[in-house]
Length: 223
Image (cartoon, rainbow, N blue to C red; front, side, top):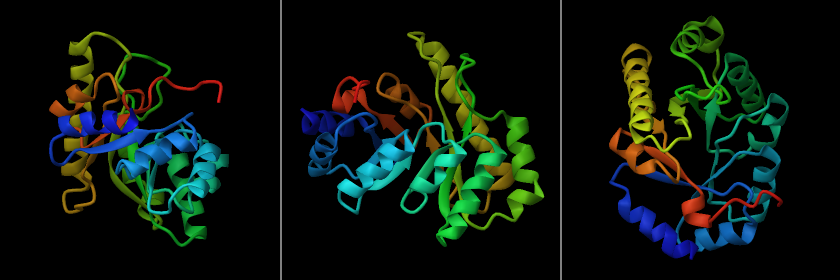
């Protein structure tokens, strides 16, 4: 069913919106099936799992890290990661920059913002983002490139609340684009929306949607 699921989802996405297949907890055989159906961008939230899958699967896959990234795990993904969605602190960005320098890479990153009502979600607020982007330390970072923003909406059936949070992330993106990245074309990504709410995210300006269970089925928590 993976191929059919991918085709259904792709049919709902307008031009300019990229599908990230969230493959966390899924076996390599499932990712290979999605790959054979034309999917090339996969999202993982555990560094070691992502490293192992990268080693087992075709080399033209683009790997997106979408979970909370611990600094002691950065080294496992920096050699190959395409995009890190979840930069939620200045310290993390500095650590990514330091590790990327060792590999002579410039790693693309998104700033993660806390837009949900739930306290458990990670992310920056606007004040923290401005402190980061205005800092001398950031200006000296040569091995990371900020390409946009990411956020996770509240896990709720209240579509109005979800839409409000996505609108807020789009406003954050617009503000940062105007104030810091106006002349930088790489700052163009808004990563928001998952299996249950990605259609709303698309309506509110998402350029990347992170869809897992609608492609692969329910998560395999015991794998």
